[in-house]
Length: 118
Length: 110
Image (cartoon, rainbow over all chains, first blue to last red; front, side, top):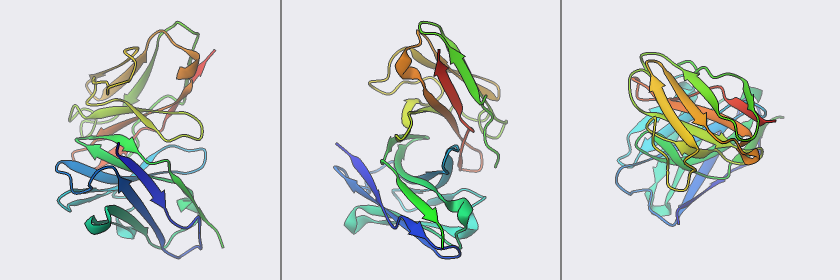
């Protein structure tokens, strides 16, 4: 059974870079036809799609975050990661990784809370 | 890109039916049949309930159904049950090869 698990620092200082990793178990991130993505949710607010990467390596970004975000895959470790530069308090959120096939997010990790604070 | 528009809250009594709307544009909801719906209970990750407008993943109750007309998609829950109380989010693929979520709707089962 495929599972996703997010990992990373729970706290990041303003202006620094947030780095998160999603480890995939029970399946390969190189599987044909799948996208792997990141979605975030500020406390008490709604969901925001951040970025996705296709199994072929093609990347897709939310235009509002594109200048600060990089998504990448690490096939040898069966992981994919997110980097968000120049963070502010507005980037405080629960960050979820997810797998999608086609155009929906079918499988989610449990999420990891990242707080931006000095 | 702008969030899809959902009502902030809806409510219904057990056994009743409710419908949650999700309004976008001709560049997202209206452009493709790629609308999905997610249920989120407090402190939990979202769960896919409907995909490609009308399809239910395996294991999702048939009480959940989806539809679309023009730029507006809808999620209907029939025979409301207490465990249906949760936040619901719609999502659509867009003509810009991105994905966009709705602002979310809090469902209260009275």
